Length: 296
Figure 1 (tube, rainbow, N blue to C red):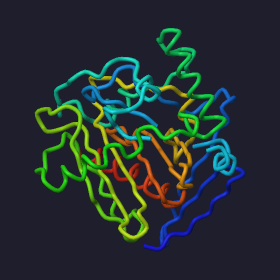
Figure 2 (tube, rainbow, N blue to C red):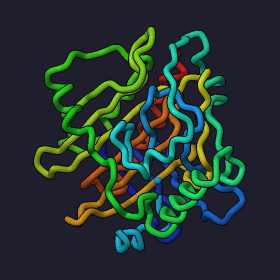
Figure 3 (cartoon, rainbow, N blue to C red):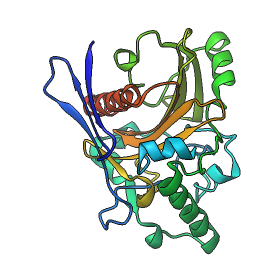
Figure 4 (tube, rainbow, N blue to C red):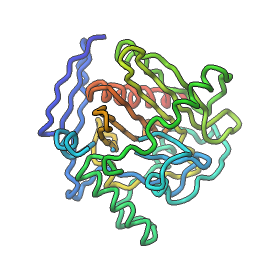
């Protein structure tokens, strides 16, 4: 499917229109000093069984390229791990309460000043917010957890069995750039009555070596998820988006995004993809996840 892209770096508004469709995707950046901050990242109470949610859009993409994820990963660095305030707890799936209204109520966004955190935790999150504002990533332009789960996922996909999930994975094949194939899959989180509540997928392009990792984690309505506003500074068609960009020593560009999509928390990291390609996948994840939830 041919896509037409309109990208304005100066205003940080990204519009993607599918050919034959009148629905554009709009990405809007909100300065961090506005009172209407759109959303940032910390889990005060999570239901992902001991795993860490991490990941954000810079204030100026061209500036970030000069200055220079996330997946759900138990091997995250101390900087990333500090973003989880309360340890994740095991939970049991309850299909009777998994509907759109209750899932929405299970997610809330609070300002850092209003969060119930100790002094050290607030200082750490404040540092991440400053890094995001000045370098485009909460780590300050340093790679931490990106693609650390890739090798395990490849082995699991090749030799492991397909396992049940507590939710329906989003099908994103049509949104991927031409040539990308699924090369890894690993199940994460808690194994409940209906299956695991987390799944990691790895997509790669065999010729260009570009990569994309996506983690979907089911949000349990009985286990609220609280996120820090100042880290979710972008708005994607009405959905708060945490976006990061950094560059490694080889000059490869990494994009990272985190957001709530329907009944799941999504974490994505790419390497070797351009921004319109990455945002097309984000848009597909949001659209399809919400459609899946409506069918439940």
